[in-house]
Amino acid sequence: MSTKFNRGKAYHGSSAVTEGKLQGATDTDYFYFFCPVCEGKQIMRPLDYEVRQEQPDNPYNDQLKSKAVKGFTLAFKLHCEKCNLTDFVKVSNLGWQGGDFEARVKPA
Image (cartoon, rainbow, N blue to C red):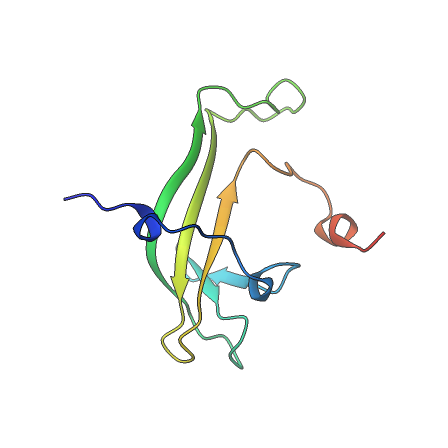
């Protein structure tokens, strides 16, 4: 049985997860998101995901040496069991393709 992502409700990551506030790390080869509200590194639980966008070609392939097999955006619904924060984050290869993160997010 298939259900709609976020039960069909609109979603977007809140200010709690923007501007570098949502961080994470790997253990082995698994990535874990840390709650941006809690002290320390409380791991957030992925509750759901959705392929938001998928396309056969990646628009950056002709500009870069490395080649992506396709273009995609994945959305994840995350939850912190400690503080009950539920939020959303996206991972994509259709946005920034490299460079210095700090330089990109500095206020103008």
